[in-house]
Amino acid sequence: MAPPGGSSARKSVACSAKRSPLETETEEHVARLEKVFEEIGETPRGKTCDAIMGIIEEGQEVMKEFRGAPALDTGLLAAAQAVEHYEIARYGTLKTWAAELGLKQSVKLLEATLAEEKKTDEALTELAESEVNHHAQAA
Ligand SMILES: [Fe+2]
Image (cartoon, rainbow, N blue to C red):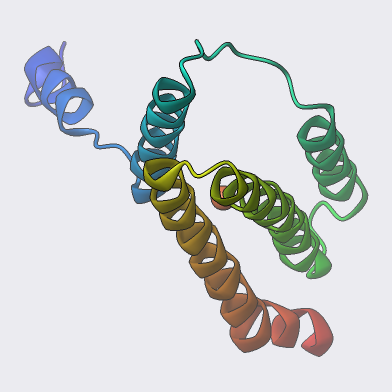
């Protein structure tokens, strides 16, 4: 026997699943990069970033090592911030290069993304300082 609402209820749950603000922001970052490539007359192509893969691997080690421990969230926050710091470094460099090349539209696009990366980093810092680290210390 089907649960109340049956498959149509499940379907509506699946259909109402929205993208997280972070996913939407990432899509916007990709769209901006596509515009940067347009300005320089190049075609973007995907490439695996070894640095980010390393940070993700580090996060996975933290998950294994601190599973169930109060320090888990602190460790994961640190890994998330490492990603943001890497992005800030790269977008900052790209913005500088775009300025040196006189690519005005690209400077604005990269500046917008850089500002969002910094904002995310600040939010993570605030979270770490206000909640997670206190819980880790209390345990
Ligand atoms: Fe980011």
